[in-house]
Image (cartoon, rainbow, N blue to C red; front, side):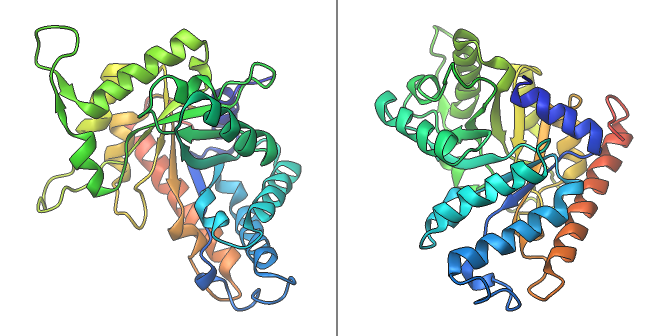
Length: 307
């Protein structure tokens, strides 16, 4: 059986796409043509997101539901479980990754594994590394190998810079030291090597962006630096494109190392592309546009092009 990264790479080559479609519903944005039609809000939302997923599938290398958007709906977790099953049944070659950012002591983390991977049926999940190696080791189930385990490293929300860009003295003796997020990149790579799950492990790494107050500067140094730290041993799940204003060409240039090395997420721009009866068609159009923009950037880079 192929591991997660191998499945992702295979899908990216077959469909010529690096797009990760985020499935993050907000009840207030539920299209009127679906609202009240399926018997409950949760069923309405499930049908809405299913139609978005099915329409955008030709342009998706993976799907990524954000669990809080489903937990906030009464019976939403059951709806999410059904949605994941529907995607698996109709698109078995497209993995479903759960955005849940769990991170706790080993015993609790094991329960998150059961809840997110076993019960919901997701093909992988992300975790917060703040509580150490337990945060990933307890997510590993040797009876079910090949699940993606992706650590938070450099996130796309601006407030994260206050914490993640904290300068830390060199921990191994005299030296310059580095940013906290750099240490997490090193530690996560070390942990997954020790645990034997490198082939499925990854990092959340924000897209290239324009720092506040820097109108002429596009920042991608974090992606370049992270590749210096982990090489192509870990794949990057990249948020920040779309409504968050990230830059595709600079992201690809700094992070892409061939199929399976990155997946670029877009959620709101695809899910909320239209509130009318054309919502599914509009979502597919946005996913297609993003795929094409990414592929153009890859062709400009030339190496390892998938298109």
